[in-house]
Image 1 (cartoon, rainbow, N blue to C red):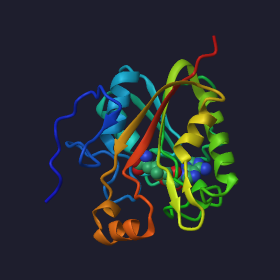
Image 2 (image 1 turned 135 degrees about the horizontal axis):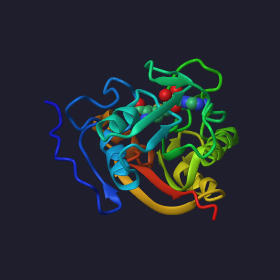
Image 3 (image 1 turned 180 degrees about the vertical axis):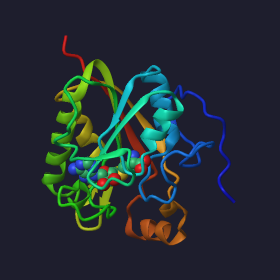
Image 4 (image 1 turned 90 degrees about the vertical axis):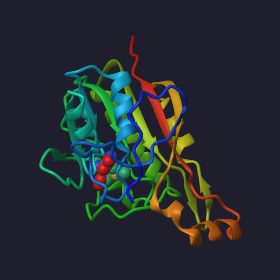
Length: 231
Ligand SMILES: C[S@@+](CC[C@H](N)C(=O)[O-])C[C@H]1O[C@@H](n2cnc3c(N)ncnc32)[C@H](O)[C@@H]1O
């Protein structure tokens, strides 16, 4: 049975939970795409931080969830990806975007969490870099600088990201590292925990491995909200 979807409501605390990837009519992104962002997360952000007609950009657009939520709310979506899955997603590296400086009203970014998923063969894919490798954080840093460049002053960016537990090296605090990277350029606005409902968490063998191996499965994603303020 598909998960029951509660009505969409603007969130007012720093703990967000919604049981499905899409929120209903029309469809947002693809439930078949591994690593799609829950659409209600983007809906809540656009409701709070944008107005109708605003330009919303996603530099890691994947199955296009951001573009669909932008459409639902009357915002103008612009999406980029090194593995574009649809015609309305432009082929570009998040570190070198063909987007004019200060032309965007809001940025939503859900980059790869190290090399946890295989997104494709493009050698520019950040998903080919393990989170234990500093090159991963250097790549994210370059993408964050690009987000800062294209965003208008006094406008917001949200980063949706998850920590990683590596078999050999243990915990990699991607969320904390990214907040520190973003704060080189942006002002911090808030930090939200989004409860995860992915398939991995439904498998009992994963829970057994976590118990026996003395580690935790990832139960939440970080949602980090920052603001560009140059005056
Ligand atoms: C977590 S997925 C994004 C999911 C998307 N928000 C959705 O709802 O479907 C990460 C995406 O980043 C893309 N990506 C990886 N490296 C990239 C790069 N250097 N520039 C642009 N996109 C990149 C991958 O191809 C993948 O589609």
